[in-house]
Amino acid sequence: MPSLRKSLFAAVLVSATALSPLAASAETILGALSKAYQNNSQLNSARAGVRVTDESVAIAKSGWRPTITGSADIDFSISHFDARTNLGSNRGISLTTGNFGVQIDQTLFDGFQTRNNVAAAESRVRASVESLRNTEENI
Image 1 (cartoon, rainbow, N blue to C red):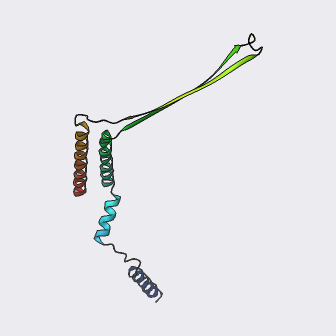
Image 2: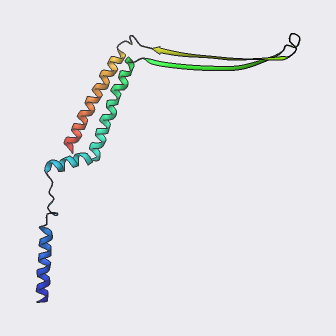
Image 3: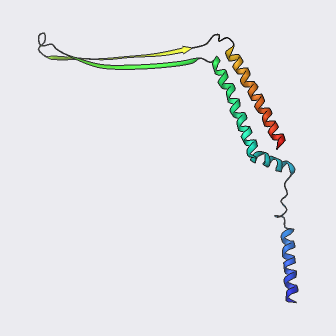
């Protein structure tokens, strides 16, 4: 009889474990696809490539923006001379000079180079997005 009790106890324990609510944590198909989409290294790499390519549009548009350049300089000098003949003492003169400058350049016409660079960058972004879609479909 002890082996029957052990078998019965083991059967009850296994069935209780199998039927417990913690063991039945099913996930929806959309949740599983979402996790797979977020954690796939190929997709993450392709998405990062799209973000990098998208930055080229901002770089291309910088051709329309002005450039600002600044500079500054300061000089300090002391001159000593013998003024005994006039006043009977040594005199020194200190001189501090400085200058600064700001230059702003704005391109008025560059032969449509900036416009074409922006269009090319936007085309590369669209191609990168479609490449990401292709990667998604293949995985």
